[in-house]
Image (cartoon, rainbow, N blue to C red; front, top):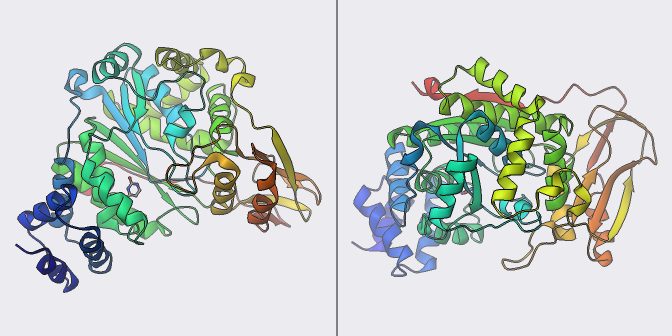
Length: 438
Ligand code: URA
């Protein structure tokens, strides 16, 4: 078999066999196939697509490129979630303790931020003392005892995805439904949970710009999950504006705590509850309305906040942050940005806020750059609120004062003010359950 013939076959729009995909994935991961040939193949996939059978075979080859976690000790209760990437999206820190408080087991590996989107691992790293790596035995023990363990993605799981993703990132081949589906599902299948909820973002600040594309991605991933005997539900959520009021690691941890205490940004609360309800429903075999009521009750009663405290303490983090947010890292330089006109605040542009937060130090502009835990952007006005010209709309936080003017420039035009009150934000667009596949 020759790599060049397989690239040609895909360029002509033909479907590759399982053996041919195994040859490509195995050869690339082992270093036998060079970057330029894999990049040409990936571009051909972007332009020509893949059949469902090819996407499932690609996923399977990527899944089997590394180790797989065995969560069978938790039976049907193991749960995991994945978001396709957003701004101000700190849902894992709310969903994980909700699932634990309900009696499920959230044993999860999370990634770091990518581009302008935030990553759960960077947020957890902002909690003083929190251990991002645990031995497999400690990971399973903590998940069993506390109902929740979240660590950094292990390089041992789906290493083919790691290698292919790095190449896609620099060859404009990220935005392809079969490639995204195989990437996400190979990692999630390797991580072993029986129940998976996928938060597929739609909008200006998401990979999927339209709901139709997002539904296609959702169905592709659900079909893969079903082929591998997992339960997969998808919540389609709107990502035109940041989900919460904060973009930046410690700022988002503080906001997750606000939601767990009954406050916080309404959209973040709503999406977190929707994701948690689907996992609780699957893990505890509850119908959707009962699962939603349970999630809501666990948030209201403070049981989820207590589960958060137990989880953070078990993983070496300082649980005192729950009562005293001043213990979280803070950036020394701050600047307020003001609104140019009066009216009603209709929202912020997620892409602009994400880029500004990243530039201020919350994310990475190069692969190995360290992030600043206290840096980011906090919105000071909620969508729908009346506002006046000159009113502060956001506060910028950074360790390097010289970055503030450029961040302000990125945010120019990012805030929309309307003369009439905007319609209330509806961040949950749709929930796709197993039955929707039939
Ligand atoms: N997230 C992933 O893990 N993979 C992709 O390809 C896109 C988003």
